[in-house]
Structures are given as structure tokens and as C-alpha cells.
Length: 384
Image (cartoon, rainbow, N blue to C red; front, side, top):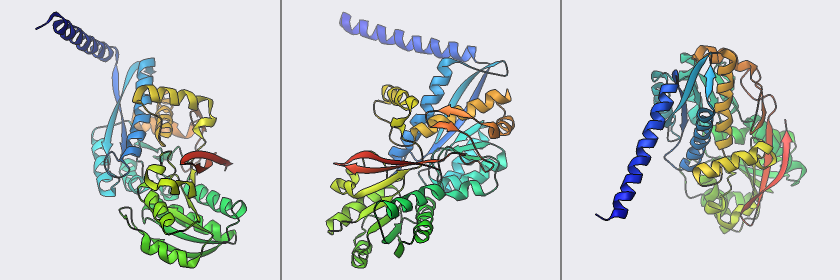
């Protein structure tokens, strides 16, 4: 064995021992370890969005631990317990029950509306605060659960904003609507349709596909014959990207209107040059317009080696909102956190977070984007 190899191993061993000592010291200093649950799809077509969501929550937990957290005179160390619901409602309820059994103090999740809704009943029964960073279906907070909160605007705001843009800016008079039959896609499409009709737009058709579909040519061929001015698609980018791509391949030149499920920076990876036909919304303020947004992006890139994708700043702020509730309550007990939540007034990456009586944001913001050369470009910001 060469001296350099022995030295390398010695340094590595010293490094590992140093980390172990650091962890041991951290554990010794903590009077209490508090678990925060986080759930998103880490497997399946939306896994990259799920990982981005997890990264946002993890970044917040690591920052808070590094700064030190004292609740009720006790030194508290946060522990992020992550679960994968694969975007499946049945799996979502299973992991929700697991987190309840593991005695987490609060939940950041779930990511999809279709998983957030069924899981919310389990958290409500257990009296555990649930803050979704991205579920936009209005039904989530209309169930009467005192535990249900979200740090994102709803489809009741997002759908109408898209419809108004179609009416006022694009001068759309006829539209075809397609959704992926999920709680998110269908909910967004329905909210868009209601406002579009109220604005005087003629809805030529409203078709349903599914979130596993790959071939949309039959639907698109029929829509092409209807000659709409625009097409609205409710669903995620895993299906929406191919939908836009196939529309362009069929020679369709209509703009495709979509929500935050389609509004990712790298949409062009799925849609090709058809990304430039997409106008989409994000149920939140533009990250690039916030002073704290730039700092968040720098920290995210340093920690994870890439840019934030979509949901990470929402998950990040959700963790801080939970911790602020702990501070006001002077306790990490789930019932005390829950009691402190209505008084939330937090200035974070997303701006000011305050909740109404249902658990929705008091001041929702919708950002509208287009794509130029496959790159996402801000169009407008609509305050609700």
C-alpha cells in the first residue's frame, strides 16, 4: 500500500469520525427531536417535481437546524421524514397513516391534489397540521378540516386567470378543453370552463383523457376539425408536453393554455419546439421577482447542484410556517401547532403568507408565462 493511499484513507477516516462527532454533538445538544413529515411522488412520471418538493423542505430543515431552534425553552432539532406516494391516492393514504403512527408534528404535502385530498382526512382525524405546497384543487380546503392549509393559490383563482387572459389578450372566442381526469387536471379545467363561459367564450368540447396517456392524436384530430381559437389542457407536463408536441405535428397552430402542472422550465424536453405554443400559469408569485427568491435559488443550487424546478420554494416556506407556529405556541405538540396556525403572518420566499378561515391564502397570486425558444418567460402577474 502506498503512502498516498494510506494518507487518503486516513483523511477519509478522520472525515467520517468528524461527521460522527458532529452528529453526536448535535444530538447531545438537542433536548427534543421533532419530526416533520413530507410527502411527494418520488417515483412515477412526476418524480422530478416530487424530488424538487422534497429538496425545498429539506433545505429549510437543514437551515433551521444550523441556526438553532429553541421552542418553549427547549433546544429542538428538526428531522424530515419523507415518504413517496407515487402520485397514487391509495398509496397516499397508506403513507399518511404511517406518518401519523410515527408521530410527526406536522406535514408538508402532499404534492398532487389527487393525493392531498384523500390523505387530508387521515391528518384531520389525527389533529395534525397539513400544509400542501402545491395542491390547487379548491375542494381540499372546502371539507371543513381545521388541519388543512396550503401556501399556493387555488384553481378557483388559476383557472379564471387563464380564461381572462384568453379573453382579453388572446381575443379567444372559441375554445376546446381537455383534462387528464385527475383531481388536479379536471378541477383546473372546470374552473377555466366556468370563467370562459362567463366571459363569453364558446366551449366547443370538453374531453377527458388520463394521466398515463401517451397518444392524443384521436382527440386532437377531432379538435382540429372544430377549429378552436385555443386549447385548454388540464394536467401535468408528463402528458401535457406530448399533447402539445402532437398538436404541432398535426399542423395545429392554436395556443395551448395550461396550469402549473405544465409550467416547468424544461417543458421543451417533453414538448420540443411546441413549448412555444404553450401559455401557462403558476399559482404563486414569480420567484425571480422576490428579493428572498434570489437568495433561495443560490442556496438551493449550492445544496442540490441545480436550479429550483417548481414546488421547492413553496415547500421551503411551508416548513418555516410550521416552525413559526411552534414558536408562537411555545410547543411542538401537534394540537398546539394547530391552534397557532390561524395567526400566521410570515414573510418568506413567497412573500407574505396569511391564511383565511378555510386555510387558503388571503392574498393569492397567479403568474402567467409563455415560452420563447423553449425558455420560460414571464407574461403577467395577477393578484387576487
